[in-house]
Image (tube, rainbow, N blue to C red):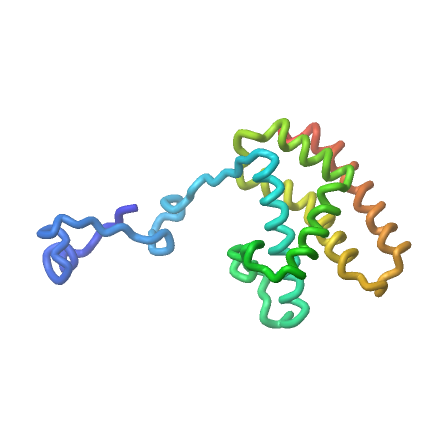
Length: 185
């Protein structure tokens, strides 16, 4: 947190020694990459997980819409994802759409099993890498439910459900393999 300062800052202009102040650098200006490394984790009960997934759906849906309107302005960086959106600040119509997507996602049998496993085994802490693994597993499902909600008969139902069946099979295969390799399942 502390960064070495030159004599001008300590004795001269800023008088840090005289004022007995300490300069705390922001993480971007530190010279050692490990100085700013913070080990984040996620922890929550059923209500917190539900809110996490609803917020994830809101952010993903908004990102998809933004990309559709301005694909050349989106760069696939963390800054392009609108994580500061608040569900409560959305219009009633949009809240209903997000809520329907969330409920459809949440009522999916595979997602119920996955979420119930998370609740049973991870009410303590889930660190960043495991959380990324979880999100990588569920993101295709969320995208599918977003597409299904906003489809307006553009894609035939049969095609949508063929995609869903492939997602289900793929997830089941992944989970069978991951049981051996992860402590996650």
